[in-house]
Structure formats: C-alpha cells, structure tokens
Image (spheres, rainbow, N blue to C red):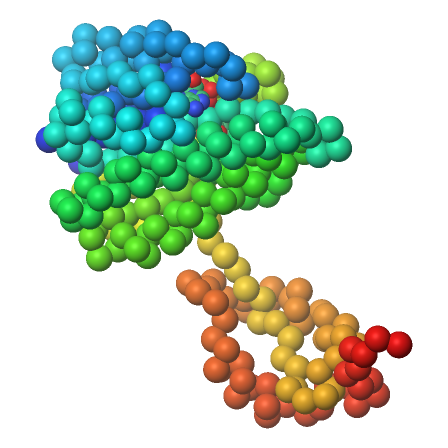
Length: 314
Ligand code: NAI
C-alpha cells in the first residue's frame, strides 16, 4: 500500500483557508498530525468585506475530527500577524501555503487603478508578507516548505485578467529566487497552478465540468511537495481533475550571429526561423551560456554583408 504522508509535530499555515482549496489543505493537514493556522479574511471573492465565520468553521471542523487548529482573520497583507498566530499558539512554523486570493476581472481597456492595486496587494504583496514573516523561522530551524499559488491565467494569459495574470506569474519569479536562497537551509519553495471548483470558478465554468474538478483532488500535490521527504524546489506544477504535471522552460537552439558589423536587424530577420525553431530545444535551469555562445559566434561566417549597422539619427 502507498505510504501515508504525515506531518506530526509540524505547524502548517494556510492562507485563505476558510473555503475552497485552502479549506481542503487545512482539513487534510489537521487530519495528518499537524497543527494548523486557518487564516481567512472572510470577505467576498472580489475582496469586499471581512468576517471571522469562514475561518472559525474550518477550525471547528478540524477540531471536531480530533485535530489541532487555530483561526486567524487578518488579511495576508498583514503576514506578520498570521505567522505570529502560529508562533503564539504552536511555537513554530514549518509549512506556509500562500493560497488566499480574490478576483477583479475586467478587460484591460476598462481596468481601474484599484483593480490592479488590490490584486497585487492580495496575491503578490500578501504572499511576500507571509513568506517574509515565516522566513527567519524557516532559516533558524533549517527547515521550511513554501507553496505559492499561481494560475493558468498567469502562465498562459487569460482574457480579462491582466491584473491577476501579472500577480500570478510574479509569484513564479518570487518562488524561483526563494528556492535558490532557501536551498542550503532545506527550505523548499514551489508554485502550483490548480484548477478546481470553488466560488472563484463556479460562475465561469458549467456544473458538469465543475463536478470533475473537485478541490480535494489538489491536496495530494500540496501534500507531497510540503512533506519532509520532498526534495523538489523552484518548480511549477499544474493540478486539476486528477492530473498532476510539472512545467518547465524551453529554449530554442536559437540563431547565432557573427559578432562583427554584420550583426544587423536584417541578418537576424534572415535567421528568424532558427530563433523560433524548438527542434532539439533545451530545458534550461538558468540563463544561456554566454561564453559558449561567444566561441560559436566568432567561428561563424559573416551574417549578411549587404547591411551595415547604423543606428545614427538621420
Ligand atoms: P476561494 O475564493 O474559494 O478561496 C480563497 C480564499 O481566500 C477565500 O476563503 C477568501 O476569503 C480568502 N481571502 C481572500 N482575500 C484574502 C486576504 N486578503 N487575506 C486572507 N484571506 C483572503 O478560491 P479558490 O479557488 O479556493 O482559490 C484559492 C487559490 O487558488 C487562489 O490564490 C486562487 O487565485 C488560486 N487559483 C484557483 C483556481 C481554481 O480553479 N479554483 C485556478 C487558479 C488559481
């Protein structure tokens, strides 16, 4: 039989855990030995209002099943207070799931500054504030597991969601750098892009589709990535409807232009098919090897002797 993953003695903070995906994570960790901080501001999916009911309900649920949990009603913009709740009640923090989120969908033509600012404040600044508050504890104990929640909208774009897409992909860059800074402290940081039925998606997807996207089906991915046995870091995962997959960057072989005065726009245009050709592409862990490229480029014949570089104003 497969191993039962457990989190005994650990404290897990789940933001936005009063409903949707966050609730599923919180209930799971509570059932597997962890002490859980159930954070939720308790507002609408557009970020209006607040209340304690959403978080309280999930705490009650965990406790009545014999688990340990405590509520926190702060906005993720106030990450210090959320992590303080973990420390005050359980003395530690081992896992942080940046999950809280809202939507302000509007076409770019009609977007208002407040639609942009609020999405950035909750998704990006909120994740930053919570992670930054947990980070000293993670470093000190040489252990931490951080998940941030991106979205297909961020990875691929989505009509009417410039604000949300920008914030979500920003979390990828955030996570990739934190993975590097956290590595020697056994702090593993990953991004997930879930698809699941929740109040966020119930208005945009038909009921038969929603029935095949249960939020509890995202739990196993989060469970594996946050478990002490995991070694994965700095990566992006998609999960939805029972399908879990890893995403990575791809780099085309690219065009090589000789480094002389024939390195012109026209020369690049002539080799454009090489820039966009993904045959024998690589899957880079970092930027292109400039030195390797240097050697290759200087050995090449001139690019296009017909055109001379000339950026002078005429
Ligand atoms: P949801 O609306 O059910 O859950 C989000 C929770 O976050 C709510 O309980 C809400 O009260 C809470 N929240 C909102 N603003 C907060 C704040 N400032 N501070 C603390 N809590 C706050 O939505 P769902 O679907 O469970 O979303 C969870 C995460 O997954 C979000 O980050 C969302 O953007 C992301 N996501 C969800 C997808 C889906 O298909 N459901 C698709 C892609 C991403």
